[in-house]
Image (cartoon, rainbow, N blue to C red; front, side):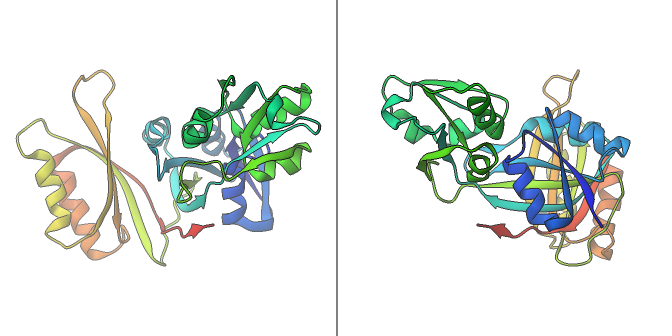
Length: 276
């Protein structure tokens, strides 16, 4: 059965590629201009699932999407860790020596910083999307510029590859989350994501994390984000091994709730494998 899957960007975006890795041929891609539009569309049931990037192995977290996970009542039901390989794409007839402008998303530009620093007399122009940059130089017939995007974008928009593998490091992975309005608890190789805030007392975070340590539950990641309207107070996003339905994890969460001011369950989902 076909499923409609929303993602930020144009056709050929890395988020779309991650979606195909997770859903295969049953995916019907639905592009959106912004990450919030993806969240909103999942919440309203306009798409069956959403795909969003949450962190990059070289440049860290995408904070906007952490904040959106807190604001929208939807669930994480899967993840994909996708190898990100960047290509410099241009219209046919354009040579490397003729490139005066390079367009791409700020994250992609940062991931290709070493390559870009070697170029002389080239203007670097941030855009809202990698694949969108490729689409733009094609539609506008730009002959003095190039775009940094995935190889799939070159096929979608009929562009040639000027340079391949221009990212700073070959171990460049982005973790993508699969979102749903329905809670689906994974049974195989599960990990769980939650959000909580602590009381403003000494040792509060230590005690909160201790409920997992005492039960030998492995913590995979912790991320802090500021609480809007409460300067110097923070909300914590936590990933840990195990299912919310496991007795040990359930006991840990029960104790955590007693010592925190806010708690939100984001999802129990299967650990994603790295996709080259």
